[in-house]
Length: 271
Length: 284
Image 1 (cartoon, helix red, strand yellow):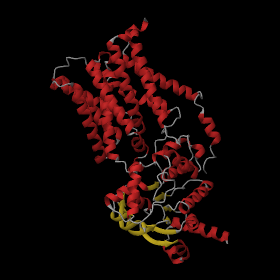
Image 2 (cartoon, rainbow over the protein chains, first blue to last red; image 1 turned 90 degrees about the vertical axis):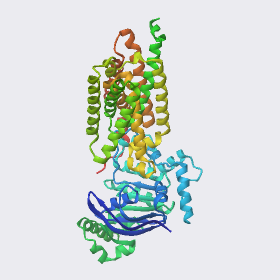
Image 3 (tube, rainbow over the protein chains, first blue to last red; image 1 turned 45 degrees about the horizontal axis):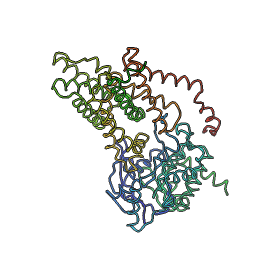
Image 4 (cartoon, each protein chain N blue to C red; image 1 turned 90 degrees about the horizontal axis):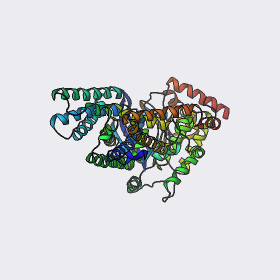
């Protein structure tokens, strides 16, 4: 069953066409890496999926549109590129993670819809877990349990990003959307982050869409790849993408070439 | 007894109304400050002045007209801001001046107030009647109850509006409801410190408590305590010293703010030092 269907979706950003008639589907358990240079429309696509942006075309969650789509939307976890919060906001890491919690009523409604279409909701926690237990668990997953009482504004960029990931995880998402989540974060934190990503994808069977312009990371961690620059050039298995030289050539944006170079470079080292 | 005056009915009414308003202001104010809407209270109170003038002009109980005018103006401005994308500070300037303009016209049309204009500008908490006290108390309880019930969606909405929207919070409705609560809070606070000093009660306790490095709940609790303490002390001290209670309350809040600022610089909330030690090295 498809978790997400994007059918012929076009949308504008600041008056110009940002995504053009894009169609693809995401299956349960996919870890889909979306690559594309800056301004390729990745964020616009995500915002359309999340109901924050107008679009033409159809987007379905578990086959649902309209009101049922809206009922399922809270169960989508989203970590944007940058969260703009007031710099001295008096919220601790714990407070921010707690914001992600959904009321039991919404969870039940969403779970019923998912079951109706013959799918299952893969929970991270036991069904009877208390909210405080859920928060502690996700803080451990992202490695922030010791910083729980620290104010979010006092943390480094990487720690803030991990806090937002925890906040997206605590709702036990059916789909996790990450928009260049490790941009500007040091390598050590990046590696930690990727291992968390793979862990929740494998162990908790959470479907993930993850945008990046780091081809190396995509090739190391994703299971499927989509490649876009306003149009969708490719969507399919990772190996197919990386073994198809023509495909890589088609996608000749300068920013990408640089990453391509890095990718080949790293690859030769591995061999 | 030195504190005999506390047994006077007007003093007790002043304390009850004052403390109720102080709690509402601190709670509403924290969200306003964090949404960068610090001057919104000022704008609302100037609208309320227009409303009060309208009430006297039409011979209607002025609190009702003030509430009606400021709530509808606040809603209108919020809608206008959304549709025309004018900035927050410009919207506040529009409200502030139109409210005051309307008030001045109505005052001159009625050939001056028969009541004291000064008391609206700077408050007259010692003149609160029993019926006013009861209605203010009921309104404050309502405002506080709604804020407690909605604390989670309100916090989420204030911190990150888009995530709140994704989580299924009806952000627009919540925004209108909150603006209405803020307008009502301003009406009940007007009696305490007057139109011109309302911002102090909305902003000062909150920026003071925010300096102390605590989480959201504690920050709000500290803010409420500071606000209540300043109000009670201000009202009590103003009587034997024969000072204006509104000014006294505001200056106590200013003193609390400056004191905290100095204490912070002196390293009394010295969390910063340990933070530096435990944080990993900065990103490259």
